[in-house]
Length: 351
Image (cartoon, rainbow, N blue to C red; front, side, top):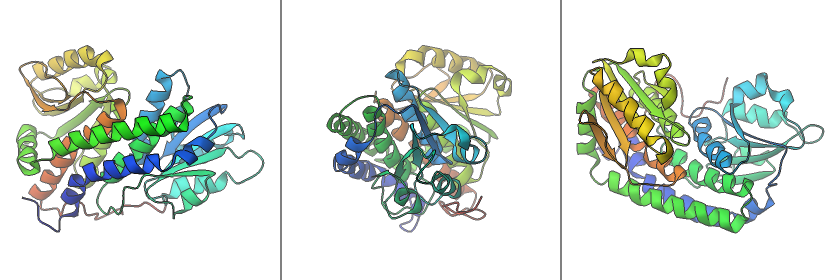
């Protein structure tokens, strides 16, 4: 069982409550959503680490509505692509702390006047440099967090859900109501998955065994969960893990498949599920172990973490939980205090 002073497992378990706080918070920020311009020339989402990973969700939602948008690493945007942003553009700066060095510098660099785009921020709380330097600021209401991102990632997805719907033409009321509904669905599913976390963490640890290669595969909005899952293993368990677009795994990385590989397939969108399950069967046939995270299983060789059919933002929030539990257990096995940082810090304030 988790020790009471283990911040990582406590914050993992705190996600249902964080999602419900975000659900309330998004309804309380309809006025902010209403002030956001809905037809900018260009929409760019940016962030670093888990904040950037979350941006796969709104980009996918907007694409489905026929609205072009892109997600760009804040450092790349700051140093190499800054000149592509103009006064008719919308820059969505996502930073859970609101203090990430590259995002702060980028928002400072897009100073008022001249070629400054409209900046909308998504942060945990509003008393931070990114929120203070933005035209409009959305608060995820995740609350205090000291371990690798769990609650704050989930809260970001709620605000990005509402923002994407607003930018696709929905009214502020409709956008906030849809995001609130999705957040509550995610909270209920997360609560179910976390009802007995220690045995589930043990099961996932047994599934991984002593394999040294661990990959997470996702498409569309589920790519956010794949990237976040790999980051969680790297950060919390200090072990190598990689994320791939599922289709891209066939284009070279499939050669890694074999008895030393563990592959997690995040089965979000039904449009590509048959393709994903076919690849899962092919990977399993090489002797690799396969874990499916979704509403249905695949071949006899795959294990399953069942997640009910959920809208994209809800699935992306909930589908990260298996990696969190596995990372927590791996850290404990390695004698690492789960959720602590030995080289970096939770908030990266220097480049």
